[in-house]
Length: 442
Image: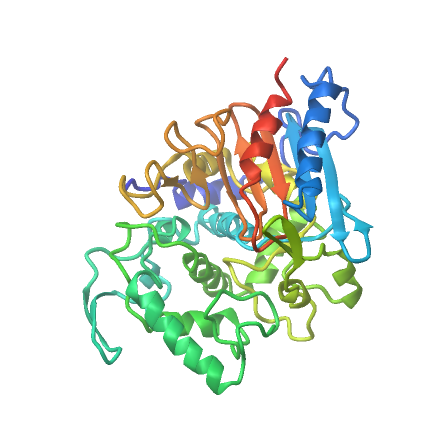
């Protein structure tokens, strides 16, 4: 495991004492998107744009997608920002670029960036053992599961660190442990008379306790279980970012939602992105969910969007839960492309972004598949593992369960985002991504 070398706390503190403010150096990087773009000057053409239009419209015409939002910017110039299809097929309401989408795992990168602000403040280091800040975290690995559901364990070979949480290599809820917890949570749901389709306040990871009012409740419960593998030895996706979010709460003393809004969402001007909304009318901003089934589009449950409006707004996860329009998240992507700054605000230092997006944290062989690499919060691309051949080896990315995807490509100075709201869908994103890169071909 490669260690994460970040700023020493004394250097960071001295920078802050010397008056290193959140105001960014606006002379070198775009601080706002430019929507008034001359296509020729931006390196593209109307014909190339029309080619993307044709592809995305074909997805709608062939019933492969209900609604699509797409966004491409190079050097801060927006060369593509359009929506296709229907926000609501039944009422024939057209999709727009301002529609809200359920972002699911796109939440993870934002929470990871928020945690790294704590590293830069010298409050924690990425390689610190999690147990230094949460003594209750498990230090045992399950070795076997008995027929009666009990299990045998042994001590971990090395302690879990925050880098393990950010790279999904912590061992939390992994392997047989996940099955053990799912069965126990199913019994909890049955005793509470709550089905998988019910919508408690907030979006929640599968198998979570429907009665949990706070993320802390879930994480204290999770910490009672052993790990599924030794930290750093495997890829075990998802739940680690929930623990990371809880650690933000323990270190800062603030709810995760509050700290993320203060340090990432508000400074970047991501005004429409949130876990919860007070006004029920906001539900009209969400695109409806549909499934692609045998060449037809069928309505899907909208329970995740409905869960964003609630009087009980205390439960917010680190792994999922954010929602919003595509341009909001594009601001976050541009900040990363800018090495930590956008909207006149510095979120992280360039060296921190570099460490997060260039250093693979996984062993060479892992369950992510051949060539799969992951840094701190993002998948890293190389010659063996790319969503399309045009993607450079400097690119990093991730996405969400319902078909939202994004990529940040420093070598090509571009970002590209593609949004669906479909539990079941074909892999349309790679086709769009190739077209996005072809925008800049002669």
